[in-house]
Length: 100
Length: 196
Image 1 (cartoon, rainbow over the protein chains, first blue to last red):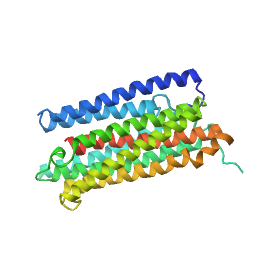
Image 2: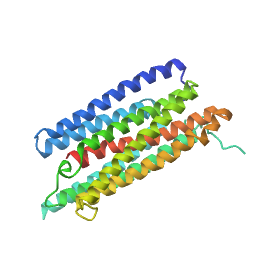
Image 3: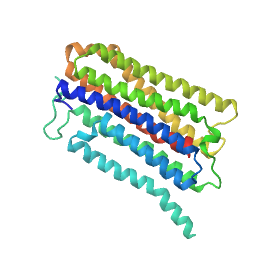
Image 4: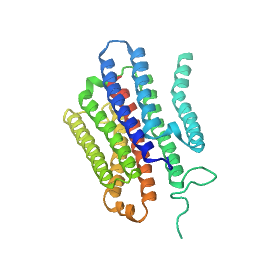
């Protein structure tokens, strides 16, 4: 992000506005989905799916991850792996309880 | 002696030092919040019954807070873009707006918390409220921490713009990355706690 021309920055600004509108739209979608009687499983998948889209927009465009150096990607890959392990721990616990 | 690589990228990492530093810090933050999200799943899957967040919490207020935070993320990135365009007055405006939106988030959170306390709902009441107050309380502390740093760069720290504008711009990029992360955490906290 160091060597951007003023024209490129202005282009970025337009993108930020579009992303903001998308985030606001998806926020409304998230709330609207919660009012539908879809059952727990479908609600969790949809709510986390929309949250993931919103999170990706913030990470890719506001945090500029769409155009970042390889060092950052490696750092995040290791972090994501560790995060996944953390999230899988409760799943392992659930499976162990099911066996008993 | 000057601190090295505050503006120029290090040849080996391809990043200026502050940027690598904030990404490593954010990696640790992912694990901090990840541990608590994992605890939430543990508590929820292990509980005999679990309330729907909307039955206890105020969804319209939380939706308003979500809009405050995503708007503050836009104003934060616009303040960085303003510095890149050498428009310092716009930087001051957008940073001030970011602080105002962050303060609005805290005011709404204050009303949410006090309403819970008035109804006798405390972290010790049940597991749901325990993890709700832990996760949102930690998030609020991050908001307050971010506001302190942003305020510093908005007021006294802004003097650096005159002496070393490129370094100051990088500082705003770094605090912006932190701020977007705080927004990102809320994007997941909102459905997990309030809507499911």
